[in-house]
Length: 198
Image (tube, rainbow, N blue to C red; front, side, top):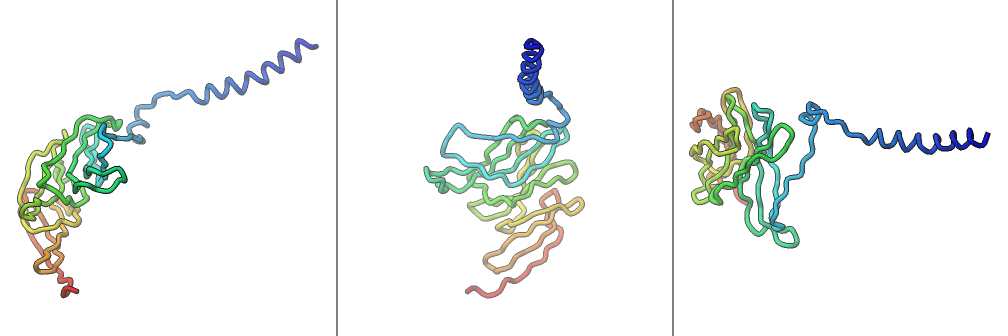
């Protein structure tokens, strides 16, 4: 009778342990890993901070991530304006490559757009305030830089085979909506006056 009681007691203690170990077992599911992943992308410099702006999936299942890379002080305050940063990952979110653009390019509109199987974003050339259309390859490298004209890109989106760009003209105090072709040519434009200065 005592042996039977000891067996039941042992089973009572071992069963939850067995169930706990088996429930913690993590079987790989590559398809689920492609659909849902969380990754932390870090820098070995403690004074660098990243601000993600947008992401797009590439034909190989990987991702392009458009971000700003900033230098910060010990309190987290910006020391330098953000530099444009493009990160390429595989389908699981693992790091493949990255590119930090020249510091003369800045203020990207926070939209990484896909038009005709190619990836684009707008930014501004800081020395002359001219808007640039950047074409990004699937490898995360800048394939082409096109001068669009205008200044201060604010927002962008896709409109069929073209892109819509909202930008600001500080001299005329107008916001401008432009339709931009992948060639960088402005197809149509419409300005909206924001009124006299305060």
